[in-house]
Image (cartoon, rainbow, N blue to C red; front, side):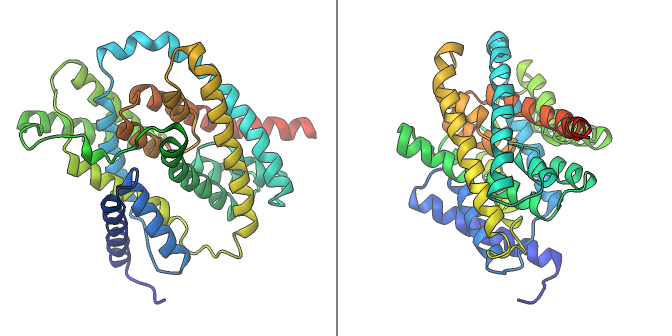
Length: 350
């Protein structure tokens, strides 16, 4: 298929994503706007349709999601900090166990060299691992396939798991939110917009991997905590964020052919299955010990992206602040320790 202008390709991608989300919503499927857009755009990408994601637009939606997450950090949330500390230890063990298992799978099933397998195996940190892996001499073509496949499978399977196995409904976020009279007023809108703009600017200056979500989340958390803003973001805006983020996941498969990604894809499926099984097992084992609901702990451990897991948490009305905090901890840990640990292991071998 002929190459399209970037703006036309982005518009085509959003049309495909919106169509997929609308159909999933019409069919009553879980988390329809994100899953529908992700699946439709992924299918088009693999079939050779010149879909394309807009990183500036995705970053804007990430800021919007950060503002939304900030609204969940109420005064009562901070009384649970002790429990969260124990959960962070569980997360640490989870990352070590699943990364080790995934390395073995990518080595034996994916026929990857040790460096590529290592940077393909972390349960998070796609962008960071691609850059660090390339610098370490890994095959930078294979790492994105492994991580994109993991995120796709997690976002697809987690809602289905809750619906079919746990028996918990995963509705569309649009079923929750606001009536026409409960949109933020002008003053609240200015405050939230300021949180987003200031957060985006600070994140760009600091160059933190997930800063575009974290800093607006902290700033909006402050204004919600102080009751300067009491109204949630409008539902249509959150729906748009889901379509943009879902479409961005799907567009990552552009240029990938089923034959060339077959072995890596199979290994990624196996690694992701183990990650999800360990997450489900840990959630069942530790939720009564930590006095945290099983669904919240599973969403906190699940190796999807911060944005994607946060959207699922919001749709389920789960403990969103706790889930977002653990995902931020995991991304920080992987970004800080992942490349350094690889260098240490390589030096020990030599």
